[in-house]
Length: 464
Ligand SMILES: [Zn+2]
Image (cartoon, rainbow, N blue to C red; front, side):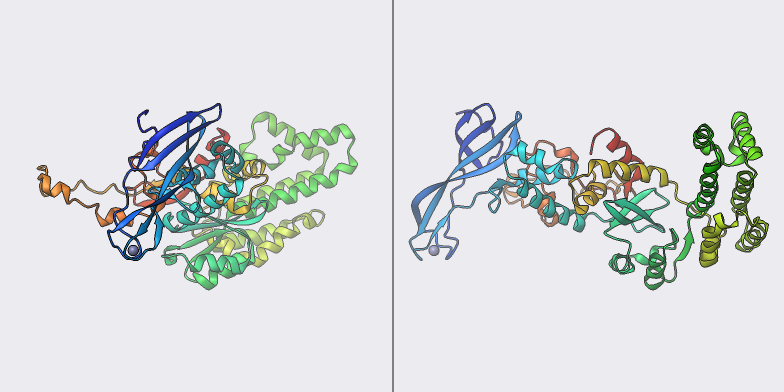
């Protein structure tokens, strides 16, 4: 018989067949049971056998089926019958536990159908393993509570709420929707929620209401990005309203040059400044709108909330009547959110990840067709290698004595309780081939969440 190709000491391989797609391995359990599981009597005798087919990890690109000749016993004391237990097997799923673990890890980054095909099982089983795996990860993986929390909207099939750590540019969670109730429920279950000192968000009342209920001490800051974006929108409105007066050629030209309008004046090169000048001279309304946009951005040079308020009022009174309607959304938003917008001038933190987050979500939506929200969320939150880890590696601890224990002590050596506390799915069989890429590293003591740019580049490289 070939060596134990299963690499599972708990089994003895008795036969092996191979065809184009599959390995068929016959095996027996190496250790026979000693006691009756019902009355613990040692007086048991053989009572027939039954063959069970157990799926295992694919080998050499082939599916692996293990045919375990399972022994049945009868207890002479209580006369009950029982089958021997199959070690390292998930009996409910008829799979080795290492296969279940492997599918769980793979299901984060691969399609369920490709996994089902590779292993030789139905897609529903992959989905159910994925679900169990994610539930375990949810319990085990704890992201640090951000001191600066960001709350943004992303479009993942539908609008969702994404919670970020602004200092670390990481995602810490994605909530099903943007409702106040959902956000309250999320915040309330976080341990250490009082560590949140600031929350940067868009002007979306349910977020603000939720924050004020659960963490009233945290300062709410409307992210600068969301405010100045409205000035750009206003300018775009003016540009679009001009289109009717233009010839098709001019319209195309203005479309091509619109990036010049949206840029800050101080960032223009000579050629761009020349283009801008041309458009503004020919279309005074556009020129006016551009000046107003630039003037609005200058409010953000303010050194204090009071100065910002004053600058805003000056800006508002300088709006010319013909372009005021284009800026009405911005004016209204400022009116509704002024204290929160002005908190920025005391706590000028803004998220740096907006662009990579948008790229990320765009790709997710493209790749994610056919996936549920739960699956996409898990793919983002639990992507292996994308977590931003930190903290200190524990100090080297000198052991009491490093002399080899005597043989009698080796014999009585038991695995420590520490090991037994590790959740089942994180424990690896010694025979597992890729021991190094455990989803949770053991010595980092801080996990800040999913690094947005790392994840975006992993997706670009097709690693997710
Ligand atoms: Zn018994």
